[in-house]
Length: 405
Image (cartoon, rainbow, N blue to C red; front, side, top):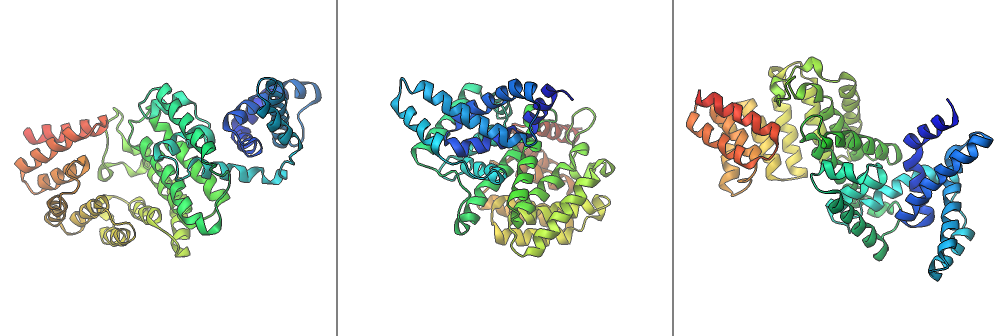
């Protein structure tokens, strides 16, 4: 492998680590981004002449810091404050190189700070931590690159103006702050999971899993492991989730031989570890439910009593009408469609989830199984009117066509 190939490989594997360290040292996202590119350009020139150093990452961090100071000094002719910043950075001791790994964790917590809007947290995390381009993120979230770029700029400005620290929170604040980080990872995965297979958003699932692995590696909290388990168990079903023609295949109809056994085994192990800690939360319980499905030979052998019991626990930990809906579907599988339908109608009677397409889809399915064709058709039509996801729309239309036939 020649020097260019080695540098390209380092860019793929080390660039975001180097960038995270430069953000810590320079205290500025944009300056760190510029320094990152300058460091790799310097590496291309110097390593081609002198060879690749034994520890390339620390070399790149130091080179980037040096290049940033040089740029600030040149620009100081027009802004004296930049000269003062350059002076401070030049004489400020860099942290020991063994802290470089922790810089990624600091960057995650900065991007997911609760003072920032959730949409900004997601965009900033994907851009600064994962290294996705603005164009790629914009395509995934169905917005324009200009609008997405403005969202990121506003978030960076707020970080500077409000003095949001580039640091892992103190132990006392860690649970609340970690919840914000995990929520961002979960939302990123769900955005990709709900997309059509092969679409730009589909790639977000892989980014969410990589980010969650980073959290578990650097901050081995049980609930982080529980979230990783949930994402892996979901991802394991991807090969069977759509047909050869791109149609959505429901869980009970999926070819389980297509499921990824390695991901299921890893997810199940992580679930067990999190449960044994006795410090788990909603992500771990959702992962435990996913594990019950993953370990069943087929849909008919699913332990629905255990699934309902886990939903009972989840409702106590995180009460919500969506969890109630999922529990109602599980009750229908355990006790029959009449029992599940009564629970769903109870949610609607309270004025909840009336505009939630999945509730009406579930209600339509239970009515269909009970032979209530008219009610099923009304429910499926309501679900079809509410959903904007094309795979779900096609599946609902198939259900309606079958009822009309």
